[in-house]
Length: 142
Image (cartoon, rainbow, N blue to C red; front, side):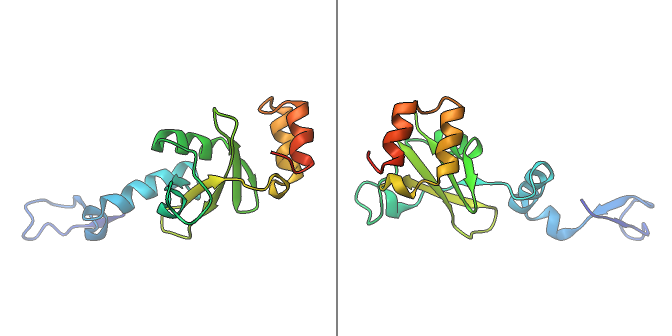
């Protein structure tokens, strides 16, 4: 928070720090600033209507905001995209939305060959997928 020196005239205080008006009236910005202390670019799960059941994009198998945020936070990053696997074994891809405050939406990976090899290797090493599933995905099979 930015502090300014107050002369005390007309405010009833002498020399007390004052809050900048912008920070006092914008709690969303303040919470984003607090989040950025821990992480330079905080990522926020923000589902997109285009990936809902009757949308025009690939299906989004993530059922809740909490599940989506957890998968985003614990995902495997490759460039701007982040990959993870749901409890049901569905591999999802998170895409940044170029929105303020780091919004990401997700959708099911429809083509297994689109999953970068290093992501699959990391999932295998971490026990998220079996060796047989790894081989299957590398060959482009669902």
